[in-house]
Length: 90
Picture 1 (tube, helix red, strand yellow):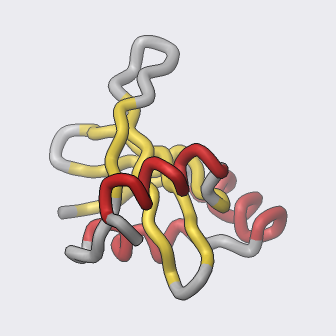
Picture 2 (cartoon, helix red, strand yellow):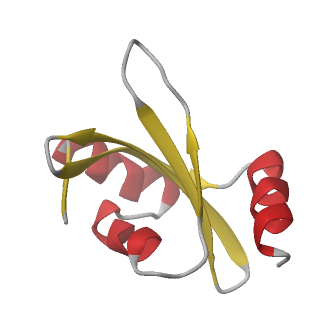
């Protein structure tokens, strides 16, 4: 499984949010996660939410061939955390 992203967007996310797309593999390493479809602009986008330590994060991505292309990464919103907890009883 591979990942791709726009490098300028990655650098902006690091500067603005302190989050690096390089860590995105952790959303898919077998830990509990919730994947939800979030189509936009005619694209089949997904958002995946999990937690690292005490904080929850969400990555928005889409398939490009066999590669997951990262669109954004941020702290999870309250409704995403509720959906995660409802699914995983966390």
